[in-house]
Image 1 (cartoon, rainbow, N blue to C red):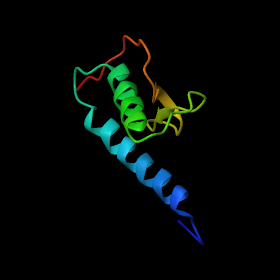
Image 2: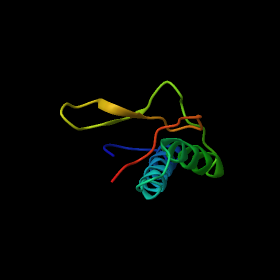
Image 3: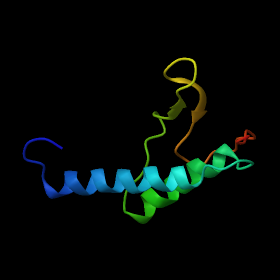
Length: 83
């Protein structure tokens, strides 16, 4: 963070980092993508925040912002991680 960031801003950044790491921990072979979104959304709610469904995570394979789309909220997706 740069400049004078108020306590609310610092708390939001910290909550975002906690959600990020919770989502990363949910990634494993055979796990459904929907688990990631569920974990992130539940973590955000437990910290007093909500997720914004208009935004999503993405892959960085052959090109930036490529597939797969990773939603950070509860969603019924049938896709899963492969090794």
